[in-house]
Length: 192
Image (cartoon, rainbow, N blue to C red; front, top):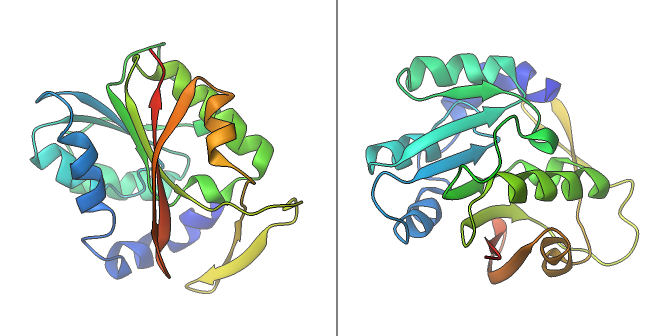
């Protein structure tokens, strides 16, 4: 995502080293040691990928921002990261035990979010969890909203129901946690 290329250096120094870590580790704790986890929209790898790797999981990062991935490779040189599009995950079918997407999916319009769900569902093993942050909103959200990070404009979009979107792509919604003022976390699981 071009916008993240523009703020990669700032993001590296400004982002909290705890955002999403507890939630990602809670999901990972349900998996066997050494499980393979896809960090979708991994950015610079800090803090989520780093925490998962330190906890003994095999993580693969996927991000479209070359500048963020350059930071990732410096911070986590032994962890694989791929520059690619989450709407077309460049991995074989059924290779991941889990997927996590923190702060990425809501940047995509509804149709693209559906493509991400289809793509992630394809690369997950049966019963694999998929944790994501997003927002639900009834009605037409085609225009979305905008916000700024370090002077760069970002777009944000919502869908009416992640339960429905997940079900359309072979996933079931397991839990929703709303952290007011921070984010809403959706835990889905690929149907076996």
